[in-house]
Length: 80
Image (cartoon, rainbow, N blue to C red; front, side, top):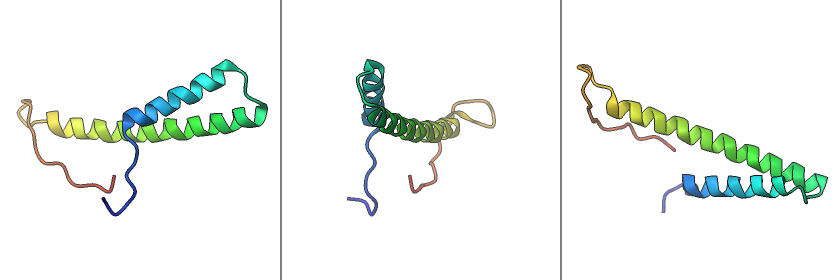
């Protein structure tokens, strides 16, 4: 296991966000629980957005070549 705790996979985080949205859409939660669910949903949205940005950067490294051709090169290791 790595030194830091492993984060859930993108798909797992997205599934949790879908569940939160579903609970909110049902409209059955008391106000305090709705607020907590909304806060959790916003935390998940931020985490997913950050992951998507990191993935976008990786894709750019893959496809950008000086001569316009598809090139592949090693990515720098990150703490992500």
